[in-house]
Image (cartoon, rainbow, N blue to C red; front, side, top):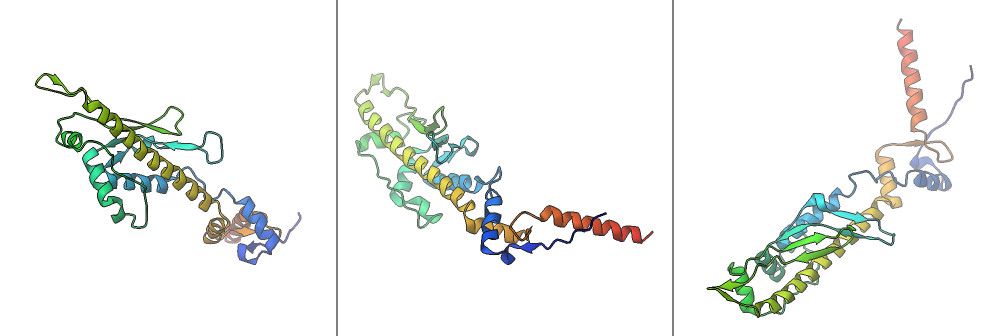
Length: 231
């Protein structure tokens, strides 16, 4: 039987070279299947403050540094609420420092009034595309008729309204993608990795190699030896 005595060290006790090695070994320590939940919840709440109801389960993204980089989501839009909350910056109650470059649409206010009064039936949606890394919109407008008369001239204004809604959707989707990218970059930063290592009291050999398994093994051996001494 060979007996090996091995000194183990906390992250703080390692020299600079060993610390760098330890950080590389644990570079994905904060990336688990749920790492993006905070970003998703944050995004859903902000959209809710605007009158946009996002289906959290629909949110998706494609990498951060690939050719297909991007994000997407599905949502229902309450147009009167969206107008009001853009005017009043309704998201500020939740995120006071957050800025959005939102503007109200430059369309005939009579059309807006008809829309808000329910005279123009609509079901606006934001829809993620098949590649899951972009979004499109659908105003969901039904034919505009009143007393058997078709108001075709309104459709030009509604086309402009749909373009405006698309601009809102693109701004929000860009915000979502940037939010997830920043969250990922923070979780994989040296500061965040070190904080997790120290919070979990991980141990290392002198050269920065992982040693938690060795420490656990030593504890188990000592426990067995103590148990055997009782009999």
